[in-house]
Image (spheres, rainbow, N blue to C red):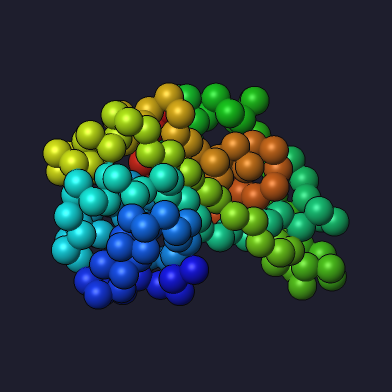
Length: 181
């Protein structure tokens, strides 16, 4: 376990350890999973080395969980609906979602606890080749499409199940991937 990769020296140690057969887990500050590739290359990791050792990248954000004690179904506000693609809005039958009204159990906030929004970029042979060729993040995402669920999409799925709110997902994911299906 490498606590956090912050600089070229730590990145090199992690890659060299992985090259010798060690399974390495670490953290890296980026906005999403695919940005980690560019960040590591910017730190000086050679793309061909990165492509040979990278297996997957998990990105996460935390959002607030709807209070189960005071949750009620409400219509999606117009301002929120405009921030969703047609595919995203389709996750919400009748354009309705759940929201906490506020109670003594949640200190009148409507939220109680946290929930994670995740995305996992699995490194396939096609992605390895693209990393070696220094392809852009957009191109890497295009190659991962079909087996990739963004943090925003994961959060919206959780919002459609009443676990969190759409507003909380949009706040936590900063509208990243707006328009993604």
